[in-house]
Image: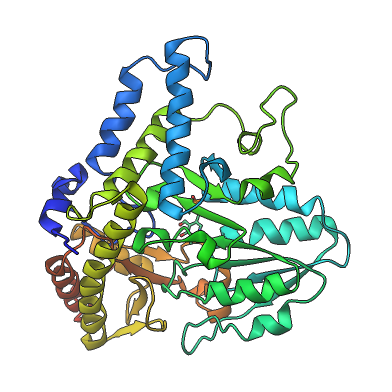
Amino acid sequence: MSFDVTRVRAAYPALAEGHLHFDGAAGTQPAAGVVEAVTGAMRHAVGNRSAAFAPGRRSLEIVAAARAAVADLLGVAPDGVVLGPSATALTYTLARTLGDTWRPGDEVVVSRLDHDANVRPWVRAAERAGATVRWAEFDPATGELPTGQYADLVGERTRLVAVTAASNAVGTMPDVAAIARLAHAAGALVCVDGVHAVPHGPTDVPALGADFFVTSAYKWSGPHLAALVADPARWAALRPDKLRPSSDAVPDRFEYGTPSFPLLAGLTAAVEHLAGLDPAAPGDRRTRVRAGLAAARAHEQVVFDRLLAGLAALPGVTVLPAPAGRCPTVSFRLAGLTPAETATALGEAGICLSHGDYYAYEYFQALGLREHGGAVRASVYHYNTVEEVDRLLAELDRLAAGGWRMTG
Ligand SMILES: Cc1ncc(COP(=O)(O)O)c(C=O)c1O
């Protein structure tokens, strides 16, 4: 396994601006190959999809290549890859479509650890169908989402279990495979939010037991696009709302309107970038993507361990708990400053961190922290370094010592 962070950083043009990006959980910077692919698809003739002329065939190829790239990233069939503008939009489409088949008395299980994109679409679909929503709770003392509760939550009326592969607030990675086994034993489907997990290690959707799995390319060096994947046979059994003349084929019928062909070309380039993270890795693209993300994970872990140790040693920092084996994401608060003040002060020093609830609405609501500004989040991505962590920690130390006051 090899990972050269200096080489990897050189593949991100935006890093030359000098900001410290601990905001990868909110969106990563695009890799150079992505920028080239997007502009390349705009510089050359690309028509709307048509087999009749060459520029039309180019857009057909771009779409097919994007499906193949996501398939390699996640270990699924290209024909099961539905592409769309965002994880939120795709999950709403799926929830509407599945919800149309639900009846009063049916049940849906969502979790309070999830980003709202894997909660509210299901809650709304359940309301429309007269179905009951049941809630999986996280343990506030540990940040875990205990698997055992699903044995009680899931029953013969359960139609769907929605759960995250990783919390975007604290990085907790629930035991999705075990939860899926419980759900499947009751005949329920499982929708897994992979948005936060996919950038941080190899993903094998069939091994997770996910019937549906969503990922967003802008969290892994790509453009603002997303993919929702399932077995093609599963898609074939579903009837989404659609326009009369639009394709009724699978997976096309779940995609609305004319897609952004340049961004789709960028999505493919992002997967190529991930496949090149470990230049020594041999094999086909799926194998190299797995190797690249495994190498990136090992690097991220070193950087993240330094961050966690540094935060633990800083006076005035309260870290929100999460179990070992988490994604490299941590939320914390600094005594004497609101999360917004902390993030703004860091921003003035060129250090980028998210603050608030980052749409992990139920999580912060359950902790009673939403009305107190949520928290500040530092997420490590493979282009971060231990030197950057040390700069962040030094700045936090300065702030904790009262080195910043709100002005105005
Ligand atoms: C865990 C998680 N799920 C879903 C989303 C929503 O993704 P999108 O912006 O593609 O709708 C995010 C975005 O931050 C996220 O972190």
